[in-house]
Length: 171
Image (tube, rainbow, N blue to C red; front, side):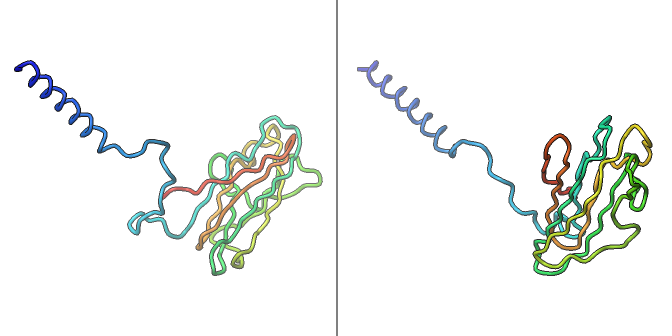
């Protein structure tokens, strides 16, 4: 009889432990997407996006690049596009190495911006530099700023199409 009571006791402890251990665990699986930033995150304007890399080392040609900026807000957005070399120098207005006829990097200088109406897309087209010609003037990244929420994507046409989204720069 004592043995039977002991078995019932042990069984109760084991079953109770299993229930307790599994009751606190929710459904398992991959985590869902992160929610929007809280009010103390500093996630407001200026919104900054980065597209990198935009150079094709030893490509020997000037492939086309199409940068697309969509203004998702209900208001006009003030946009600045900066094409930067590896040292962070803004190359707007500089000659793109290897282009024939000579072409310049597009974009804004200083604090200049361009207006983009609500729900509109701005296309900025330019060419990839020939990296072996003039390294200080090789664009390596595109930095886009806005005072309203935007989305930024880039397509580099080299041996096919390489469309991809750019990355929102965390604050």
